[in-house]
Length: 292
Image (cartoon, rainbow, N blue to C red):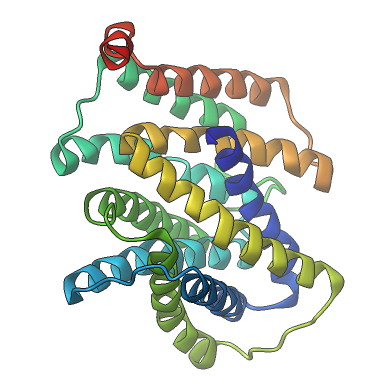
């Protein structure tokens, strides 16, 4: 499940790069959220899933949708649409595990071991080696300011949304919860499509494939997997998986877009892998106690 989550999350950056030449970001994500909301609503109705009974639970669920879907995903799409390379977006939002670790201690009462802190440092060093380009994008052009701002906003909301989901979303049914989250995300971004964009879409084969993948596989499958992992494990451990996303994006970009991978980037992948292993490894004493 963790390996599948890393792969699926990495394809979100690739899918955005494939589809954004044919639709503006607010328009693109609005269609994505609308389709995903319809799928989850129909599935929840068909399976007779329980809906939240209190206004507070509905509000908490909607907040997660606004943060993890509406703000984080839209920010990444805006960054890539405005010229930010996909690997840069992956790098900046890849700092999410470190922020989650720093926040989980006081927000969720999770204890971060020294070995885990070392893992975070190694993971950060690894993705820096992979994606650092001397302060410029992969094409040699300067990093767009709007892209930097958008990725920073995405990083903060991804971190906050993960912690909020862990603390307040554990009791909500995933089917109805996802339906509410997608509706909340749509309500957030749809006005942007009407206020700032032309809403012109080129329905090419690449756009339809990207939309289908991002909606059916990622919005429906990947986020359900993410929430399942968050419920089963510590938020900091789940977040550490995102250290592996930038290396995977770099590899996918190499095969799909002929972007080269240097020895420095390969060394970074090894460091990132070691870092994730340190963060997610369960101490032997804890494992034995759990077995007993």
